[in-house]
Image (tube, rainbow, N blue to C red; front, side, top):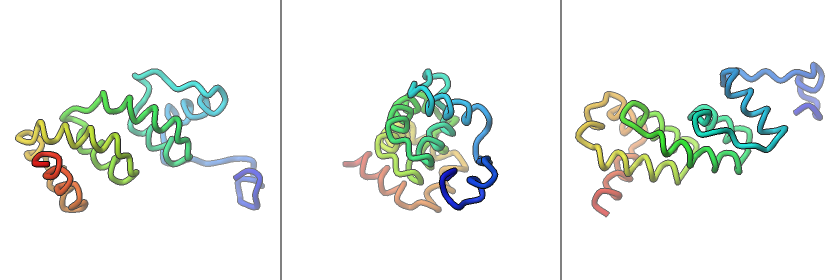
Length: 131
């Protein structure tokens, strides 16, 4: 980006609007050190950023860490992210959570929106539940 004819190469600045300063700080730290942050720093937004910046090693590591944070409060965002960003490992963990907690999950407003906008979600849940 900085070595091309793009605006960023002329100004020497890259504006990143989609992520907060914590995510950007972690990305820069990773770019310079190669160190993957601690579990408590690995948020879903950090996972999205790793994907967008094409950092597959980082993405895979964070994807595994995010799986351990799945709960009823974040399942819809994690499920949506796993489908949009094509994250099969996270998707499988999210689908398993949904199958194990279907009574609660189906009461969430986000559940209706998710399977209306992404009908594949419901098919995948049914396939996992009934094999």
